[in-house]
Length: 256
Length: 346
Image (cartoon, rainbow over the protein chains, first blue to last red):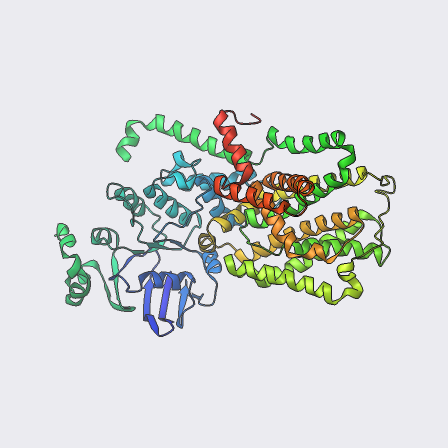
């Protein structure tokens, strides 16, 4: 298979007169570790929503492993192997962690089409759900309702649900947002250990995280790709320094 | 992490295995019947012996419980806001009534199947269009749909009898054996049996993977789309099932009263069932029982006390319930049970 995990061609999105994505093209190879950075309002989350199918693009195409998925719904794309986490947690707050995970496994395997057999009767669904929890060291929280978990643990449940979809492409929208700095390392360790077969695009403001994680970086400014390259190339680029790193210069320093 | 694992390796491993086993057990057992669940059924049987002359009223309560259960399935579990649920009750009522009065089809159980089928069909078609919307929009659309069904019935008074109603509904003996007495004992047992069977169906659905997906849609529809759930299809499915059960409730209503007017399709009935469910507690199966019983007993007694202003009492109770028992009366009972420190039925 030679087709890239994800290929975006000339993606545009207009909300009325407001153009939030301008001719964006992007390629993620299998197992890619790519970061998407840019100032607030650059259109990063919009791009995630275009890739996952929350929004239909005004123009352009999205290809998953060479197949055009532009006209598929969000749910259809999810079933083809696109998973995401949200900038703000989107969980089933009243349900326990294990029920959250079983739902994700159930929707992937089609178990959720069955309305006669009790949900817990299929042992393999529960076991698989527990495997994801175990890999993220969440088993001890399995029986806790999500709303009772600290926010940092909830962020991990977001990732666990995405993994339960067995994605080919994983989009992480600011995975450490809202997490106390004392707990961010837990999430970053988790992301470091993710299966190398999954292509990952991460949106992150923290430059330490970006440089630690990504081997390619795309800089988005005002809905357009400013530059794409290796972390070194991005750091060296004058325009990037001007529009983005300039503001974050102090946080970049510890890496030097 | 690696170091700490090595330090307490064996201990942690057995700990994880135990935690996993507990989670598996929790998932495998969450649908099991608890002893407390026998209470409403025992009460219903007890009422049969204690109030032999109030069976006609008891039958109406059972019918409203069934109607409220059907609303709980779509509203309490799937989060579908509906102010037009009486449309399906009314369609079921008219199906059973007209089958008997116009076509001479008097067998009661097949009458209920027909009521369920027609209500389900209308539920499927309207749900297909309406369930793309949510919240207030959906509330208005379900209300408007119910009004249109009512006005259709009004326009075709030659079939429905309009506000004068359908007379001449006759029901042949149950299974050709059990005939109906003046006090409605047979209707009571018949309604209780239908309620019990359909309640078990709803309970089974709620605890199934499909039922979990419905709760997921209620809790967070964005996440459901993101994990690949065919949300619209799931909602249409459950709306159709809910409509069918409401149709059965309507069919029972027509058969037990031997009379139907356009009132069965009215907004008041949609509102009343919603009030009952919220009063009892949504998304907890037995809330429909508590709400319907409290509402109807209260209505019955207040109406005797003050025929003109009984609704004031119902309104007051609803205000109190919404302010102080956000999860309904059943939620209050659950809290009380927890406070005493004994989980009922264990």
